[in-house]
Length: 111
Image 1 (cartoon, rainbow, N blue to C red):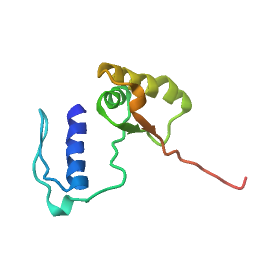
Image 2 (image 1 turned 135 degrees about the vertical axis):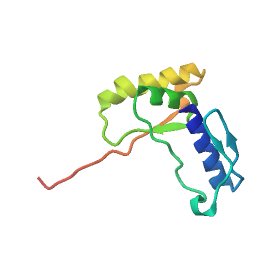
Image 3 (image 1 turned 90 degrees about the horizontal axis):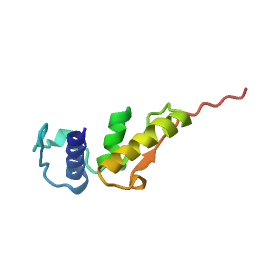
């Protein structure tokens, strides 16, 4: 996941800053951005996470996380936040540096 986050950041830099794509790691070598795949600058370059290990990895090296649409406050309190803090501690980061985002589903009806 760490390599994936690095690779995606390289792609976003290519799009956002209009710089050549150059990224090499243990699992990825990215050095070509063809015009068909170049989205150009985007408003919200995010990666979503799910599960304890991906959440911890986000705490370790991501700017923030976008939670799944259907989560409970209990799950956030008992799973997401502790795992996010675990990853942040592993990297010597303050967990408050990691933005947590949720776009909930809201259903309304007259009755």
